[in-house]
Amino acid sequence: MDFQHLTAVIRSLALEAGDAIMQIYNSDDFDVRAKSDDSPVTAADEAADALISAGLAKAFPDVLCVTEEQAASHSETAGTFFIVDPLDGTKEFVHRRGDFTVNIAYVVDGVPMRGVVYAPAKNRLFYTQPDGTSVEETGDLAPETAGPVTPISVTEPDNSALMVVASKSHRDQATEDYISQYAVKDMTSAGSSLKFCLVATGEADFYPRLGRTMEWDTAAGDAVLRGAGGQVLRFDDHTPLSYGKSGYENPFFIATAPGVVLKGA
Image 1 (spheres, rainbow, N blue to C red):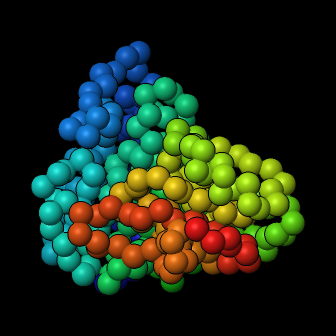
Image 2 (cartoon, rainbow, N blue to C red; image 1 turned 180 degrees about the horizontal axis):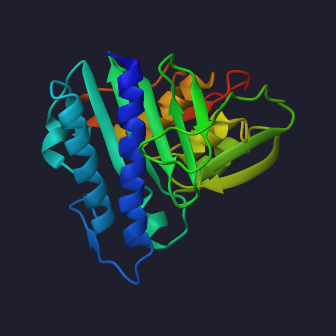
């Protein structure tokens, strides 16, 4: 894989998808429908999905693309594939809270090698560079031309005063009980894959998820976090989260800076 080309393509597609999403987000009204699993879907999900899928198929015709919005893709598996959540955080989108993202990841042999996470309502763009390190881009965020980038890195955590980020829409008692085992200085809530990026930038030390997620929810954020020196581990045995599993469903996990002393499940 030509990672220079890959980076340019997924960055541009994420930004173009973000523009399409924001056109609908900023409209007076939009329809919200329920999918078969009762999760919400909007025209923004579908527009972003169509744009990204077409762009990846054109640039990389021989690489499988698994996307949340195309159920037929969920039955296919491959050692190398793209996995896409065109609008992660649809509930945040529907309630106009801004914490939604575009996620594109490239996976090889179970590992998310490269990824991009774009939060269009917050004007924040994170991605892995061709060498695998992660950056946040600032400036105009134009799809055609990359702007200035700042390398990002996980923090060296103080285990006596940890910063925790948790889900805004999926907090439950099990998560609260787990977090209570740590010496927490402060806790913040965020939606979508932004939680991975807050750990990647050092704005938080760890993010536990004790709930159902799919690989398209996590792969891009996982790639960005890995490129910033972090890790995403299974909750049960603290081994790295892998991708390409049958059905693309994740176990519980913890996204963390390596210095956090993790508690048992």
